[in-house]
Length: 121
Length: 395
Image (cartoon, rainbow over all chains, first blue to last red; front, side, top):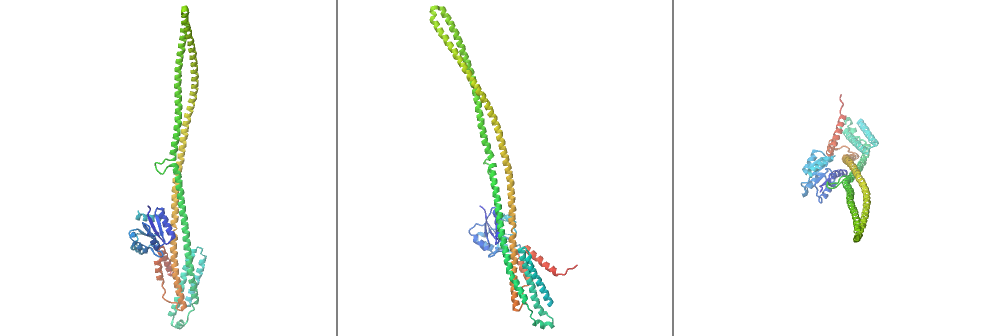
């Protein structure tokens, strides 16, 4: 059975591209517009990995990670940030919140898939 | 002070002219961003003018102190200008938001179309592969190809032809056996003819001896005559049999010749058919091999095409990055509007000067808001350009 990945990004085109790349590689994908939307979608799905943007309306990526890490099923789920942000201070904030990795946009499909394969086997 | 005011007015007029000139820029996004930058410059100049007018009153020479304190410069045109400029901001930000939305919709649609193309191209390649696979080879090793099946079917036809030819040869052999039996019969008939002749001769001798015996041999003469008649009938019968044997032999010989001829022809046709069938199967095999090789090429080409199209879809990430860059123009524009409205309020209340956030705090704010290295790089370059413009050029 294919692994299910959760994609969180406020940009519809970005969700489309990430989703397209992952589906093409055989993964199932669930999409959410922001952190708040993501939290409503994780309870009924068996998520293997989360890929989230940083700056989003309603709830940003850092807050989402904090909330997810508070959930019993998400303590050890890999959560990778996919964002245009490349500042070390922001990366540190992400790491402290519980992020497992950081990819700077624009992403390369091979780079994204390599990262996913490192976490999801 | 008058000179400064005039210079400020000139710069402001030039900026207004520049703002008007942005309308000739055809690209909507560039035009809006340029207009935003011009507006920011205008606001800065107006700030500078307001601060200058206030500062000049405080730093004026003693003889001018009275005039300075008593003269209230007419700032109504500046207020009007500021008001008009402030009204521009929501228009500009709305335009930028529409540009973002339209670009995102277009990118989504293009992305969907491209993904559909990839999916359809792959489906076509799969269908073609399946179609050729039916002819060429099954998906697993146990399943037979169409060529294998044809070869088996044609092999069965050839076996049937060979068995027909074998039956013909068997018939010929049987005929040869019949011929040899007929030869035996002919010998038997010859023996019968010989016995009949001898019997006839014996009957003749018996008749002569009976005649010599006279009256006593009369009865024996009758018997001898009957024996002679039987011998004659035996000879006739043997002759008839001989004739019949010849007729049968002739018929068999005719049938044998025809059968032999047709069997030879059938044998030749079988061999020719086998050659034709093998050639045909070989040709079909070659066609299938060529088709399979072509298909492999098409599959590779399809995958390469799909990868290229995927690359195009992925490269449209520029839209998300552009959107964020535009958002990073909209937010400062809105902040500038708030500051301008505050300044307008101060101008209208007669206290234009005040502690506005300085350029350094603006820069820090921008730097914090920018997420991309490229944005920070552009800001650095723009700021250093400003510095070099103000510095003296040394030779």
